[in-house]
Length: 503
Image (cartoon, rainbow, N blue to C red):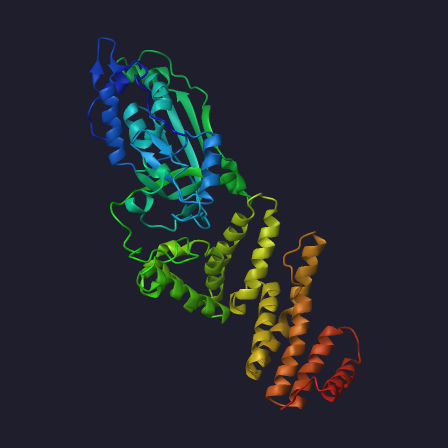
């Protein structure tokens, strides 16, 4: 929990370097009290008020490990609410519906990005209130005493609430929400380190109008706060780089949520059933969104990823609250729409978030993501022989079921030309103790070749299908000299048994 400056404010000796410091760039010097130059409570209140007006994205680098862990655990279930007044931010952990998890929204699955290391310095109290207002109580003494703050941080991703707005009348029935001023619309994940360093003597004397006095010497950085492991951003395993670093706050809106109308939310979408005598649920925004999401699921089942995504976006534009727990479906539809890279990134994030106890290795998550991609992504998006053969084999199954002999013939040629290369790639990976996929390309590919030959027989003729069946047997029994004879015998047996239908 973060608290502002205590009352009465701890006395801070103000040297000349701080006399001209402005809060948030206003240029107004701090109000002085008494001969000893102490900051008054009025001055602190004014500076905090100015910080609040221009700072709805505060860093939370002064939180300790307990604060960070508590926030992460709670944010995994519900949207977070805070009482924010510039230099103080109290997280209201009891602001929620005790009976329905996620009633006021959730953060779904984090979106991870490539990110980059950034940072800044704080050299005076004006910069402290402007850049790190929540750290005023903890760090103003260090800054006034002549120390610099050095913040370095890496942002690996962002978690965004399913709610774009939350209204006062939605939360007033929950006692724990009485003090809520804002909700956390999003928060950045990453790692940070906050260090201090004493400014060198020459700099201090120069700022005090005493240039030339004292020697120029450097001081070691001293760590005062750290979250996660900022060095882990250079590795594939970034689980140590996923702590809250910065919040994006939105003020609680006045009045009622216009989406609620008379019937409330959709049952099963985090809301309550319609009240007796209320209008038909399907006519409300929540009902319209629910109907669109159901249609999106049907499109997804049919393999139409583009239509699925379009319907999901339309539904969430009507009622964003129904976007909770849609991460898997969105990633799946994105893959099927042809954007395999983006879909895979989203799916990887979903799988990682489900591993709440962090029992799985990155290699396991990568392999499962790749297997899902090979099931759902178009073969045209494959970037290596293994994925091309596996994805084309999956498409062959669908083409055979549809009776599309031309598509079966085209996919047969692709698999036949790449299956040996894919087999070598898979064997090399296993030799190096790596398992890239859960589906072995040779097995998937040869099985698809057999299906393709039967698809061609059914759509063209038995003789045409036999030609491709012989090629399948030559590939499957590689190294043998009598594969054509074996294929003919097997083909005749399938016809006799009635398991093969020819045109």
